[in-house]
Amino acid sequence: MGQFVEMLKHDFSKSAAIYRSTCEDFNNGPSCMRFAQHCLSGRGVPADPQLAFQYNQKACQLGEGESCLMAAMACTAIDSKKLRVETNYPMALDYMKQGCALGNANSCYMAGGMYLTGVPGVIEKNTFLAYKHDVRACMLGNGFACANLSGVFASIGADQLWDNSSSSTTSAVNGMEWRGKQILAHSVINQMIQQKSGLYSNV
Image (tube, rainbow, N blue to C red; front, side, top):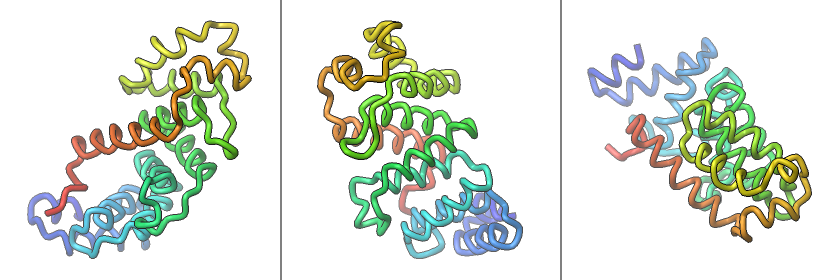
């Protein structure tokens, strides 16, 4: 019903109300995710990134892999203060892994990237887990993960791949700055999501 109102009637206020009600009353994951998207884009409701984060969290718990990814990105956003969501890399990684388990390719790719570079003082580098998540991401159709498999991981070699020491990972990425890769990953995945749904453009 919500999609009918949104797509055919273009009544975003009504569709947002339907999504929110269906999410709250029936624990419907897709409705929770779509209401979160309305909150992010400001369609039919005032833009509220913090409320979007809460509904993406719920949708993720209800099995929506894309919402797991969006919750993770909110936890690691460059402008997290503006989003009013606390930066939390371990929580972000947990959401990425949940999304990956639910078959969301971008979640797998982001988790692989976080394991590959690590987060200084927070998350240790782990080459094997990075490889494992990129394999799954590639199998699910993420071309950037496939490129990692044929590039970065191919240069590491089988012996070093199973060695989770930070030295092997550091040499493999040629001193790549973690923050720079994070910004690039956010940019790429945001573009992919926008192209897929078009729900984050202002209307």
